[in-house]
Amino acid sequence: MIYEAFRRFLVKQLRVADEDTIHVGEICSCLRKSFYTRRYGDLSLRHLEKTKYVILGLGLSTHYVLEEILQEMGFKTETPLVEYIVTKDYKIRVMGTPDAFNGKHVVEIKTTKKLPDKPLPHHLMQLNTYLWMLKVKMGYIIYIDKTNGMVRVFEHLFDNDIHVKFIERAIKFYEALKYNIPPSIEKSGLCNYCEWRWRCYNDNSSKLREKRKTLNTREFNIEHGVKTCLHKYKKFKSHSHVK
Image 1 (cartoon, rainbow, N blue to C red):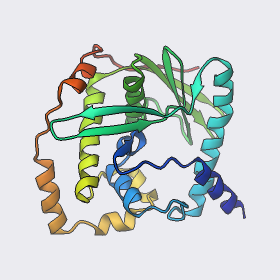
Image 2: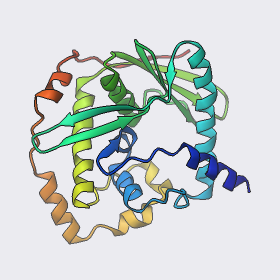
Image 3: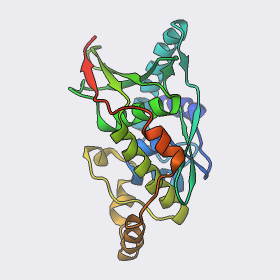
Image 4: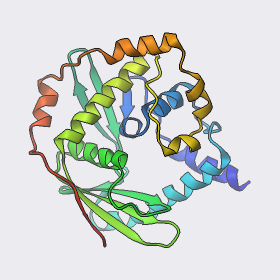
């Protein structure tokens, strides 16, 4: 009953992107996992292990508590944003939902079992992308340790290099969906907890590898619309402090 309650809670919060739209979270996480979720995921979330209902549900609940306070401080929360990546071949619609933002800052909230010494790369890319979408320079990632209640805040200024990587990954994911070819494996410590690990390890035939090689060797030309965005800001480095 408890697992089912958390599952229903998550389903109510689910954001479903259409085939012509990719979500920021899909690009900043493992592209192969995002691909399998698109192709084989169940909108009722029954493809997830039951324990993940609880883990994800508790994290989402923490977001809602903090976002209510941030609203009182003048932040907008859970507001969907849309931006476009224009290439020689495609116009890719990108959707994202930052936790909170105002006219000057973007705030992302993350719950964890251990506070990191520096922002995790996929979290940094996610925040950096929201800065691009909102055309603001500064944002914060707030890590909350679920085991001891400690909090660590990292400040980040928009970084062109990270944004270029995001664009490259977005194009790869868009083409993977378009041609129905799983992206290359991105090995990490999270693989052991992935709901698609059984499919991922077995879905690597020589035919798929050859198709993927053809896609990976293509050159992409980012046109004026995105170039303008890339050069709007100077290159910055991120730094951190603890509150």
